[in-house]
Length: 199
Image 1 (cartoon, rainbow, N blue to C red):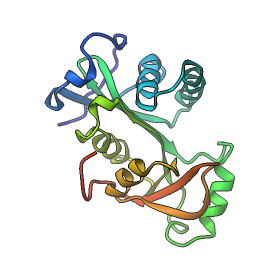
Image 2 (image 1 turned 60 degrees about the vertical axis):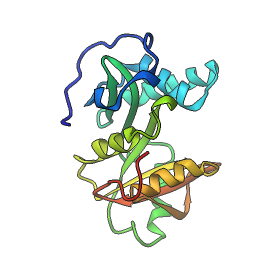
Image 3 (image 1 turned 180 degrees about the vertical axis):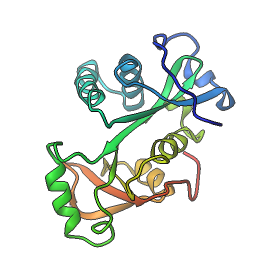
């Protein structure tokens, strides 16, 4: 299914619950994070069971990311409603943690000679749409057009579900690189794609 351009102002998340969405009815497309900020925050809140306070904090972060010119976002839509999204950008040296990340990468084998990576910053799908291949499709579509030779991300160290999902796409833990307290850095050479299962 080809990507479709999405330039509309989407409707609020309401009406038919996401669990009633059939996978065949989904459409994927690039979208403007700032234009759909309410929907992206709502999906993230449901996907991670965030409190209102946590959601507001995430809103500020996503809002800042949306203003960065090289950030690209891809969404899964049921009609005009967002049910999943992913966004990322080439690793930016202006990000507060970028210097430490690159220093760590230079000290290990595997990725040190591949240049600066594309960084998968966020991936979220509403729980009622899990295990339908939506997360996999979002990551593939986000990473397909990028020019960087490899893709990096951080995941919660405590999340076996996230580890297994990303490993199914070819990612592996990058030992010795700091990903923040409670987080693990993973990396994969392009092209990114499913290897073992749908998620």
